[in-house]
Image: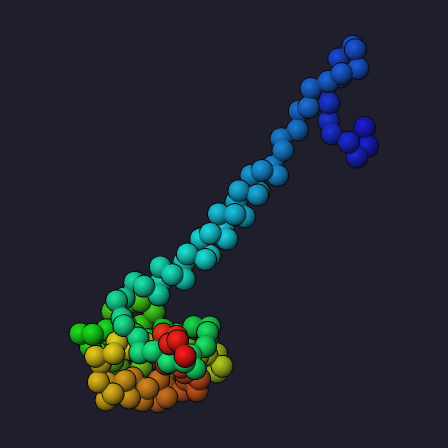
Length: 141
């Protein structure tokens, strides 16, 4: 039968459908994929407890390199603790060489000093990363 489902024919013309319908499987898989994509951002952003400063002019950016300084002045690169700033600088240089348009997003707790944030900005700029942003939490007007 052209274009139709495969049937096992009986004498009376009726038959049993022998195909496997994968549509429900695909639907469930896509729904789960969407759920994981939405929740993954929340999980990654909340992995390091940081209280960002608030600002009205904050906007969404796509993170390629995530640099975070927590309240204990510990530096994290893409969620991994980094005790050696030279390792961070080397990683940033390689990333900038591979993609000149790469963007770094710097998140710092409100108790972190201005000097510590400026030090990280300096590391980012010296590594050749031209685009960077500072994270803030949206503040009501």
